[in-house]
Image 1: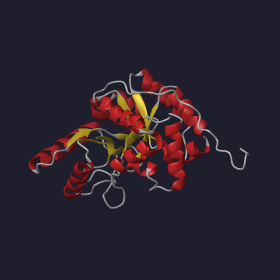
Image 2: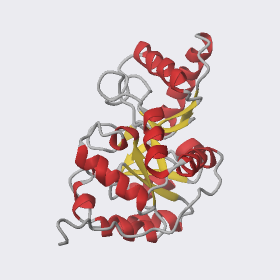
Image 3: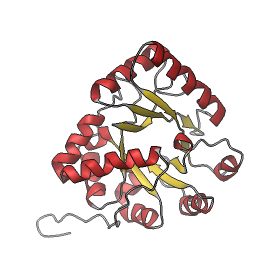
Length: 254
């Protein structure tokens, strides 16, 4: 398995605090069957700034340590960039780090709303030859209230990544329900752990794929796993025709 979203790099954001903790996460990942993890520290989220060069150096250091510890896990470079007005300039200035130097770029939105300029920003990112991936849309309150907004973004070329702890129910029943609705409506394309720590925000990637298999079958599990592989290789991910999230009837009334 490949995990495309993690906070395993030590001491750079709200993920692993020490090298020792990063090693423990790495060992847990190997036990789950994960062979590759993209390190995606926060960037420009109001608290953390992790530019391209510093991430590359941290990834190299961690990979060397894992090799010395004979832990069979490869760390690839990436970044979780919060949407902000200067994002396109940073992309041009080589400050933004696409996932494993591919054309795929993580875009994080505030959890409580979707900025009005988001649609234009996603469009402009694509004009520059990149594919934006909206991370954990299932935890965004505006998408939950208005899933048609996410449908519009995906219809216009944005991809999305859901979190394993969301689909397993560890963020609550409502978020699990919405996550499953996004999969059903073909509005999401990747499953990742977004691991921060083994205690509070563990991997659960294998469990997430088990739920995906149980709810939607083996084909869905394979598709999401293959998309992670295609991403790492900078190939085109499998994209299904997006649909609007269906409003569930209650006692025959919408």
